[in-house]
Image (cartoon, rainbow, N blue to C red; front, side):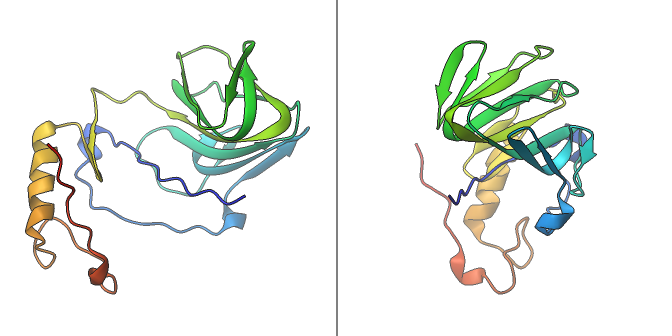
Length: 183
């Protein structure tokens, strides 16, 4: 199966005005951990004694896990915030079953083991340091400040790609998506 997941990573307050950048790392550069009916591809951050080459601004992990039927996978315990998104199949945690499409968030410090159901499971594992204060998301904008979020909306509306806050890729200016209208 092919999955497409858009993931936002909030930055610590002191880094959230950092210029955007993109990194590409081929599949072989991303750590792959395999054992007893489970495999984990670490996409960013550190988990299970491995570290991905992608630059991060805080301690975190993001990984794809494939579990064979009945396989058991403990979540990394060295990250305060942790969660799982169930892509396919079903998992059981502490006797409760969770089907595909579920997002689970766990209390800090709780040891969590994931048990794959009879068809196995495909999961996205994620977590990291708790950030200082709340984050706000609206469409493609994330910020610790509602004022910065409103300013970003206004900048996008202006479509000033030459000297404004946002720049579209040089060969992709025809794909501009206008700011959604919301009440």
